[in-house]
Image 1 (spheres, helix red, strand yellow):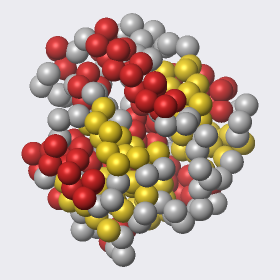
Image 2: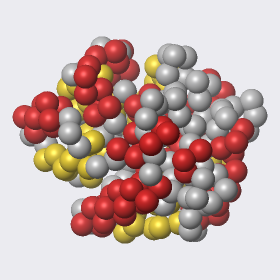
Image 3: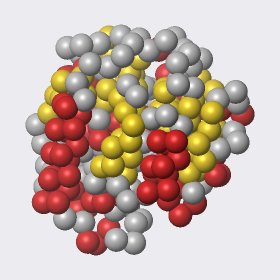
Image 4: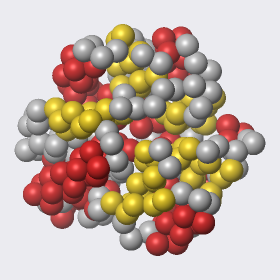
Amino acid sequence: MPSKPRRAITREPGARYTECISCHPLKRTVSIQRAREQHGAYCKLLEELGLEVIRMPRDDLNADSCFVEDTAVVRGGRALMCRPAIESRRGEVGAVAELLEGYLEVTYARPPATIEGGDVIHLEHKLVSGITQRTNRSGVQQMSDWLGVTVDTIEDHGIVHLKSFATYIGNDTIVASDRFSRRDAFRGMTVIRIPEDEAYAADALAIDDVVLMAAGRLSSHKLVRDAGFTVIPVEVSEFEKCEGAITCLSILI
């Protein structure tokens, strides 16, 4: 069973954030200033929920560097440093590894592996990983071997990251878009099915019994509250435009 996180590693959007890897129709409207304001509010909220927030220095070379979750998978006192599928993102990993080495035992994923933290759902006794455009079977195997944990997989090469469609919020409960709500990897769990027109809300972050969800998805918020959780809406519009979401913005350790 994973230990309760005490810290959150974050990184403010850098100077090249508007060059993020994204096919979102509103990408051209991304505001770095608004993104930084939303990021600051996110970090403040994590602190209010009891986490020590470690703010890494801004990376002005790598456009997607604020999405730190993709650089590492952490569990049981160890970290696997990821090997992003898109070569331009590999420059984000080194600085995160240097920081994590102060807290955890660290190793690196090796070729031919590709793996990104946005594909990995942490359950109580196992991981569920996507086999997607960004993570392959070699990456999953290296993660399982290093972290010493069972990893179930959901294969869908039509998606970028699994956690854009399903996340774990505690108490044996998954929130998922309809497309992923009936997968064998979630069998025996409670699955809250997010309405299709609010699918972005499926990427949610749980801190104890509090669930952070993208603002404006009111039906999804109600479903999660009705299941017994406290929901805090979070403004992440400028990260949605770069195909990122709430979990992408931190590594919990």
